[in-house]
Amino acid sequence: MTGNDGMVGIPLVLGGETTNYKVVVQCAGEAYRLRAEVLCWEIDQGVGLHRLALGYTQALLTQIAQNVLCNRHHSVDQQLCRWLLFSLDLIPGNQLDVTQEMISNLLGVRREGVTEAAGKLQAAGLIHYRRGHITVIDRAGLEARVCECYGAVKLEYERLFAMTAASLARHRVRPNPSTLRQRAEARLRQAQAAAPDAAPPTPWDTAHLVHELQVHQIELEMHNEELQHAYQEADALREKYADIYDFAPVAYFNLDAQGVILQVNLAGAILLGIKRSQMGRFRFAASVEPAFLPQFTAFFEAILHSQTRLACEIPLMATSQRPAARVRIEAIADDDGRECRMVVIDVSGEARHAAVAALPPAGGSGSSRPA
Image (cartoon, rainbow, N blue to C red):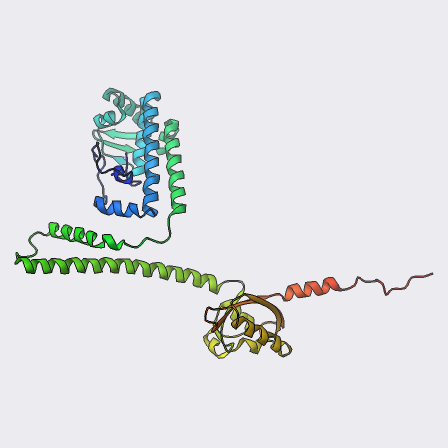
């Protein structure tokens, strides 16, 4: 039994091309239909859809095995409760359009047994039954009567889907160029089958040219779809990391070869007391205590002429928002040596704590003692 939790066509997931069973729609509703070759191609990519389909297949096998056990050892009342709860999990709402004969076929029991079990549930106020229609009134009551088979299968479903969701690939694999034309041809055949009289008959050469142009147009459309998807992924990542960059508790700076601030996050702007809209006008060295400018200049030059990360500690001058501060700088140059990327951490508190710890205790070696 499947519904909004899974799919029909499991043999494709397991590598088969045919099936020896038929599918019957029990409760009407909406579903998506996908061509087998498209599904197989997506599964062959070995990423999100493949893992999700395999997880659902394992959950379905658990359901089948538990149903066999339930049908062998549990009462018809418990089996009917299990079947009703499973059905409600797979559809919206609390109503089922199904006959007692269909339920008896699904459970493998006599119809009289289903009639008797349904009568007990209705008498208990759990369901309302009329010919071909069941409305569940008290789901909690059904869960209290059902056997442990329902809980075991539901727990396995939740475990598998939670595990699969946590491991899904974040980035979608791009189309395989070797199959792009084949899929474009398939999409064109679908369009032509949907509107067979859309194009008048033409000579072979013209028809062949039109066909090639149509296929090429579909290929471009498919490329465009993938580009749009890639742009959306890039925009989402950019926004995500922009927030992380902006609201980080430490300061980040990008300086050009002359030491001018090209980029700074919010913590960095607050540290130097500058506006980010004017960052292209300021040099980081302008905030350094004048006595330590030679040390910072030598440090900056060493960074630009090496590909290793270096660190130093220097004091910064006071601003209108904060007193003088001592900072630790860790920096590295880009591949071309044209920019310096710096992480700046205020360590003034650590310096004050170290200074206090170094003071001698009161009444120490300098105090006198009476004879």
